[in-house]
Image 1 (tube, one colour):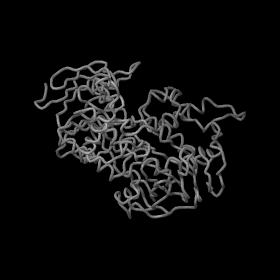
Image 2 (cartoon, one colour):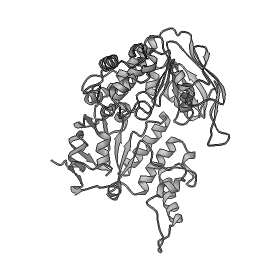
Image 3 (tube, one colour):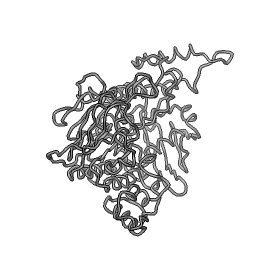
Image 4 (tube, rainbow, N blue to C red):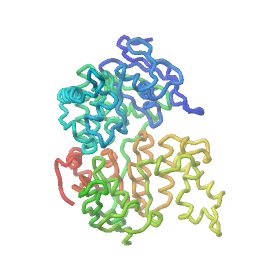
Length: 513
């Protein structure tokens, strides 16, 4: 039955990916006009898929969509935009080498009476829109020269330029500092005041409660409930998402740190793309036994390069990298694997081999680092490998049909459990964790965070890079902040605030190493 204020109605939506993966199972939801309607759920719950169906990116296997009671069929995003629906993806759809003006008007260009491109007309329209939104940028500047937060606003402006009335935002604060997230929320409130409808996908429960008028929870491709945001709590949301109670902070006792494990001295790395630009600029850092050092920073300020220098994907132009007192600055990646466990921010491309089995992914690196998995003749022992994989699956609560199933058949959370089990099982003195829970649900996050603390308590040194300040404050013994390739601050979590860390991330306040 259609609600009195229903603007968009998605009715009995089913989406099946071949051969038989049911991503959406008879989902029905109604959306009110001029409201902020948020969608939350575990990784793989179907929330992004549902929005992609609404935006015409994914055709529904069955079901109907109604706008103001009129049945619509979207075969492409162009169809959705024509009906006033736009989407800003978590991975931006901008061309870095194009200007803001070129990015915004691409595919939606103004022409004059004889069909020629009318850039002046487009510029005036876009400038008027930017002025209206309080967005002060140079339209002729290349997008790549702006911060992630500015690029995100460009994406939003691009949709508004197309005169959309419904704006889908997919994990919009994933890489923003707290102050940047606040600016985004102000923009959302401004759009809402103009009568726009905002569909907001996020895994951050605090911001869901802060910004939403209505919340929809999804689990395993099904609609759990839709409720007005009146009296809802983080506990309500988390329990609906995972079907059980969840701990929001891990138990972490203070322990005495041991000897230095990782030592970076005067590390500098030059950009090979921009002359004179330093990706890492005289970085000095020590991580001790039984210590977690968190690395904060807006994406693109050297955190990625820091990790690559430590694991051996890049060699520094200056400085030394040492593990347990040995200089490994020129060692190969394989050589460093004897002392470094590494979890990549991209579990699909760098952390696993998606077409291979869970078993094969579980013993990668172990086959040459773990003598117990090979015979005396250095031949892989299939029986021991099978037992090893089964033990990992059991220990890390990996939900799967069997160890022989391809890892790509697992949810994101379960894929990450396999990777974490493999890397932590190496029992190396140094763990390098780059966004270890990015894109995961609260249940998987809780589990992996507990395992990280276990490793630290057992003696490991942990270098933790994260865009999530809640994660850094929960896990870290020390937090460093990177800005323009430098370490600009070092703080104990108990002695600082998220806003202070955010200020360092944006360069509005600064220390020195």
